[in-house]
Length: 243
Image (cartoon, rainbow, N blue to C red; front, side):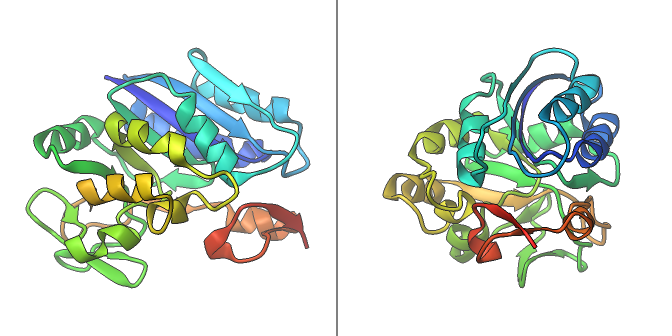
C-alpha cells in the first residue's frame, strides 16, 4: 500500500531516528512511503543530520524543507501540501515512539469500511475497559474502534497525535489553515471552511478494549536537557524559545 508520511520536525536527529525506526519496523515495513518533512531551526544539530536520519529510513521518495524561521503551523501546512497524493496520510510529529506492532492494512480496512470516518489515531493511553481516554474525555468501543462521541468531535475529534488520515480530509482542509495560529486548534475553533469539513466526518482511536498504549512522547526529556520550551501557551503553541 502507498502511504504519504507527513512530518513536522526540529533539529534533533537522534529523536527523529528513534521515532522513524519504530514506525518503520512496527507499522510501515513492506509499504511504499512518500515522505514530506519540514525541519524547523530549533536545536543545535545541523539540518543535514536530520535529513540523513530520515533518508536512512526512507531512502527514496522524500521531499524536505528547512525554513529560516520556525513556525509550527506553517510547517504543518507545508508538510500536508507537499505530500504525494496517496489514499492515506500518516501524520507524524518527530517525537512519538511506536511501542507495538500495528497492522496498517487493518487500519485502512476500518477506514474504508466506514465512509464517514476521517481518521484513526494511535492511543497514548491504555484502554480503560471498553473506553479510551483522550485528555479528560473518553471514547467508547463500537466493535471496530474507539469512536469519538458526536458531541465531542468538534473539540477533540482531531489532534496531532500519530494518525492515519483519509486524503479527502487533508485535501479539503489544508489550504484553509491559517499559519498565524496553532494548526490543531483550527480543527476545533478555526476558519469556517475547516469547521464545516470537521462537522462532516467521524473520528476514532485505533485499538481494542483493555489494550495497552501504542505510542509514547520522547521529546519532553530532550526539551529539558537542551533548554528549549514551547513559547507562550502550550495549547496554542506556535514557536519555540530557549529557557
